[in-house]
Length: 233
Ligand SMILES: NC(=O)c1ccc[n+]([C@@H]2O[C@H](COP(=O)([O-])OP(=O)(O)OC[C@H]3O[C@@H](n4cnc5c(N)ncnc54)[C@H](OP(=O)(O)O)[C@@H]3O)[C@@H](O)[C@H]2O)c1
Image (cartoon, rainbow, N blue to C red; front, side):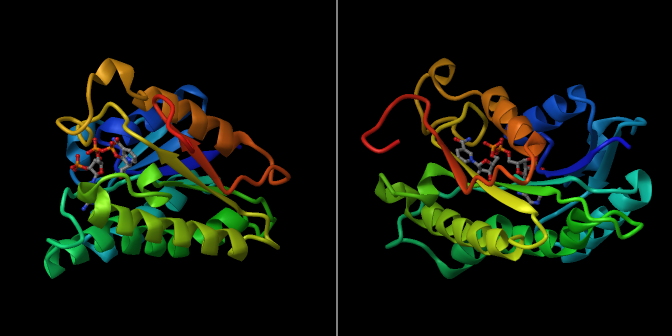
């Protein structure tokens, strides 16, 4: 039976590149989008559902619709995210809350909803699926004051990844955090330099396809990806 992957934030940028790559690789793709109507008509291999990280009911409905349509879940890509340039000294409570809600709390709820389906097929047969979280190098180190608040959310996402890894120890559901530096998307526009020099969304998509295709005997905690070279990464 064809493998199925859910991808959040697949409207553009890294998520859209992952969706295109996974569909080309023959997977069923279930896209979580704030405006699914913009994705065009569904196809046999592709389903677009409403997903808004600020609306927990949409997470439940998207997960249910995916299983109803494709009957199984093999991969969950927690990609949707937002950025902030606030330093930790300027950050207001509401901005902190919004970043945590979109970048951390919604991914955790989605993982909770998807987990039983990643552990087993509808007939109860075990089949370990995989979780990929789109974190950031800002989840491993903070290089500028303007990455401070965003960094808090991505450090927290790394904590979620570590927690999920432990939850999958016995069922063999493996979790991997991808940690890019600048990727040439809307998010990096105006922050990073020449987009042609940056990591491309398609580069990240190729990494995600590889990770999702690995057997559970290859457990990878995180993959740092830099567009160039810095001291550690
Ligand atoms: N670009 C970089 O340099 C970079 C580096 C490291 C990590 N990352 C991470 O990679 C992931 C993807 O980023 P990107 O560069 O592709 O950014 P992007 O081009 O800005 O796309 C962000 C995606 O997240 C979705 N999204 C935002 N708020 C949402 C919400 N409340 N509910 C559901 N979806 C929401 C957007 O949907 P709409 O189209 O509806 O707005 C869009 O699909 C993010 O987690 C980001 O933190 C990016």
